[in-house]
Length: 289
Image (cartoon, rainbow, N blue to C red; front, side, top):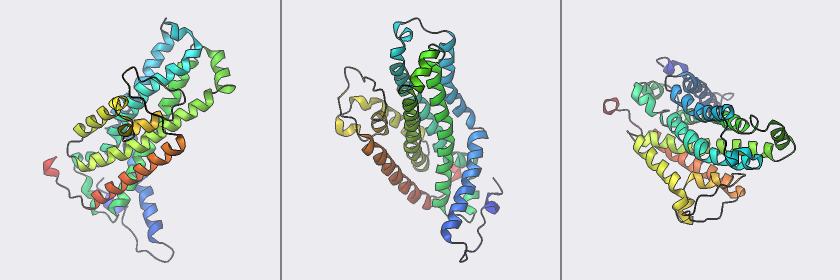
């Protein structure tokens, strides 16, 4: 990291080298550097453990299938995966994985006392933020999309191979698979932006992350208007096989996809604008960390 300042030294802009092209090259350079750290750095171990959790569980189920009625009825498998996806993959693995990846993009640099190398280099701070956010996005999307796809395949094929082939090739299985992967990508985009800003604003980001986790889990108890002030509401509106939220849930109409997807993306952009404003005024105080 000590060579970061030299890595991003900018050449004077010319007629052939506009500011925008310079910023895009810097974003790409930062993203490449940060993606490598996200995948192979010391903090990546926890993310890999989280990602392996549902896969390990489903491998055990594939080897020792439960004898309950639901696991003996192939018609129940789309609902079984939807339950596992919602509770284990989306609300746990993706949530905490994004929290760890995106909060450490800046907070981890503060802990390692290396953020000043970036701040001393010839790169705009909002360009730095964009490169880091995109690196977290690439990392989380690759890891958690793979987890989603592999988990769905592990649910179906070990137990009912022939029926699963027909379900994916001739039935709705393939569409559902891509839909779940798309929801995972949207979750990484939305949660990533929120956790990036948590890492920028809070010296101890664990408490805000837990508060957000509680808000997302208790979303089913909130009145319809408050339900929409959450990421999970829009993600659940896109799930191809809806899951009952229980007898105590407050019923609210799902937000249609043509509103959910753009709405989540617009909120993400607004959060990133706030993060860009924050980082431009950010001062490094290693002594307090």
